[in-house]
Length: 320
Image (tube, rainbow, N blue to C red; front, side, top):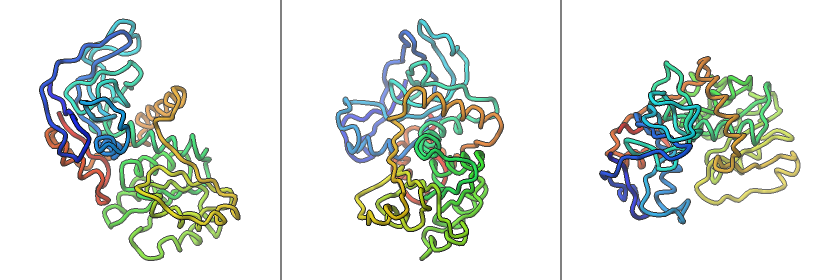
């Protein structure tokens, strides 16, 4: 089979397509023939050496994929050959024609959901779900501000929050992004490139402020978030690309909570909870991943450059 391999940490161009041995499942494992691969910003951080510098080289990148189970190992009881699944984490890495997984790193993909959409689920929807419900303990009727709502995690957060009965305010940086966010269920949209865009929050919340803020770029926005968060509000840091200075007194007066979040800390029970929710949402149509760009697996480097650009809407997927 063909797979992307990283032999040294560095820029996107360190990734190369190679011929490697086909995969064989061991006890409790399955092999998935990959139809689509999800590309996430975290993939670029790992490849650069910023995250997981202890990772053994060479390796195949990727957390997310979708396809059909082609082989099962001894002891596998809940997956079968020919079953459509999406992959959320794996043993071997997903940027390949095949991926080796533990049985429950694969999840059934409902009919009517494309493989591209399935590949867009794991990291984006997992991060959004964990931030909203496992960290912020979101409740129906609360107001949530989703920064960068036109990206993969942002779209997932808007759909999940809207389906759960929250009042959703989403931001994006251009007309197309704003229209996309509104179409996903946001009650209000704001252009985060407009001067003073957060000044509208008071009117949109009747002076109360935001109950939950999902922060994708904390190094830019965290200090501003403290100005619009409600009393007892929660700010969940999903992403940051540097350091930031804040005034702690802004949090003290409102008794606001600043919460960190990483999907890799989720327990098995928490992971099972979120994937059960994704199955239900995919079945009833409230969750509908948006794939904006499909590239061949050979263009993995192009995808890595594109996924960290602010102008990217929805998900980028690779096609083996």
